[in-house]
Picture 1: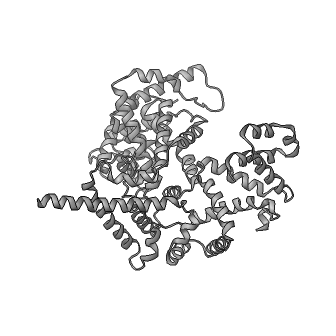
Picture 2: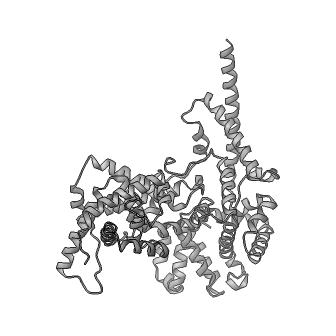
Picture 3: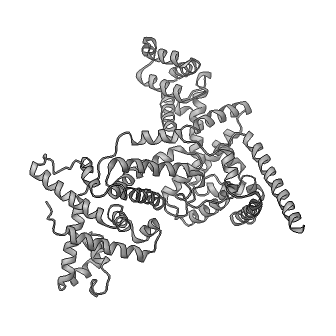
Length: 162
Length: 218
Length: 162
């Protein structure tokens, strides 16, 4: 019957479209979601300039330079940073702010203390939870690190995977 | 959830249309700052959600509280408001002021709760909620017992008078008085015409004058 | 001026009682009030209502409101790619889905043309505009994360060392 044939063709066409979408989405799902800088890089030059034109020239120039520095990073370095940002951006908003605050405090630590604090965070992240807590509650931890450093270490250990 | 969020396009399409709308509105400098923050939340900037929460938390809770007149319920409903805002971030489009959208969600949730509660309890709800009485500051000195009693009586009168208003009139009054919203914005929150809002407020204030105008100020 | 009550325009009186009328209109209304007892009475009553409503303070917000909210956000399930894919097709039948898909495609092209009529190709890749402010904030976060990540390699994370 003509109606049956039409419906059959329509059904086959719909299946084909659906399958194409499923496949495309499955492929897309393999790739990690891009961070805003990567998405910015995918915009056309005109679109980027239009956005930058909304800012004061000095600020726009700084953003261009900083993006250029990001784009010039070694691939493995950029990937590591992108992975770290991916973890960070999936934190709930309040935790993101905590991490941001602690990283700023970390940045203000004396130069000699930064590697020490960093190594402690990495060391604690590698421990099982119970051992980690025991370590942070121990006398050695309290004597080695100032109260501010202890807080930085606690929060970055809790919220940063790498 | 999408009934309360702004209308969204099909996935994949919304970004183009939304971006076009933002570009058009921002180009003439009309994009409301809160809407801009919400667009950043849409882009994954969680800190901006914190800013919006900080800015609007109290007013949303207080608005719902004055509608439902129970603090615990008001906070629960307000949680639901912000939860819906956060969860619908991916489909958000800045086609109205952010506060208008926010209070539209709050009004829907509160009015739905009131309609559900109407069948359960009635007047007794206001009496049960006496524990919600806020601590009142009377100058820098501790209020006397008499002052506290007078305050409690006046407050009860106000609460009863507002609770007795039909729901839409009540909502319009609270938005007009405590959020200082202009008629046009109230109309968008209540999804009615501006002339309907004028009529709601006229009748509401007429009723409140009849009930409260005799109260002397302390 | 015309009597607001008789001309069925009492909003002016409500606004005046709330102190929300502009100075020029307020002066004109005050002239009228001197000779209109009905309006004077309404203004006095409305002012009493306003005072009564002013006295209605809402209780303070619980200190753990934000914490409870963020916990609920954390417990929520984010949109999966599957949900985003299937949403337009539920609860429609496969036969109904095809016109919907076709419509979505037409809208997609319309959106592209609307947004960027003279330069479509690069925009069509992502179709998304990232705002310069967002890029700047992401760059700030990336800097913080990068500086922490390299703190143990001899590079300084001091804010002045950038």
